[in-house]
Image (cartoon, rainbow, N blue to C red):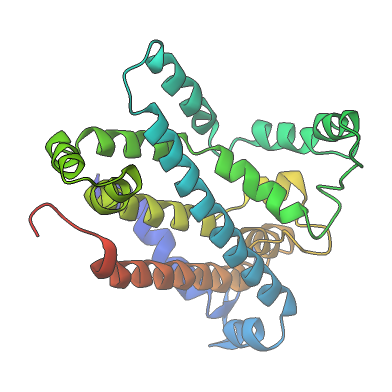
Length: 276
């Protein structure tokens, strides 16, 4: 394990930090340039700021959407009805595909101007919507794919709901608490550690998005879906600017670290543990 960690994680991690301070292309020796790559990113590369904004907007749209939908479905499935195990399995299936290229291609075909989604809209008498060709709809369409894959979060919420003591609900019901009150004052506080864990993981995943944006829209139209993952990939493997790409990767790392620290700092206000 230590050997695998050192070769496959620690070495790439530290070497990318070194390369971020160099002018390095594949096939040539790295030339140390100090902070030149970072200065260029922040002062001259407008495309970087566009991709950073798109990435943050993407995360702010997908993470709350996925969490809310996963929790709502978990609450619905937290009951003993006929065929409930089959229903739970069906809801989980989309998450098995993860960041599959095949699913991204299928999503693209569905939302084409002459695709099935627009065919349904036309059949209802509604006009054709340019989901992938509009700067207004392209990013939400990609976000919808990520939100649709809520199964893993749903499973964790369902397990957390099963562990909430029924005695708390019974006592609250005797005291006259309504369902909405029981949800806000019992359910949410009891499962808040799982909510925190899920939000943290989904945020990290969203900030590293690449597949859906690259396959479905290729970053367009007009860079409206050009996430940082695409920027990093094209600089490194499209233009072979490995030093510049390494600098972008460290910016991505800092963005993820910032979001993580903010979540941990805010958790003191809304996450409740059993031993507190």
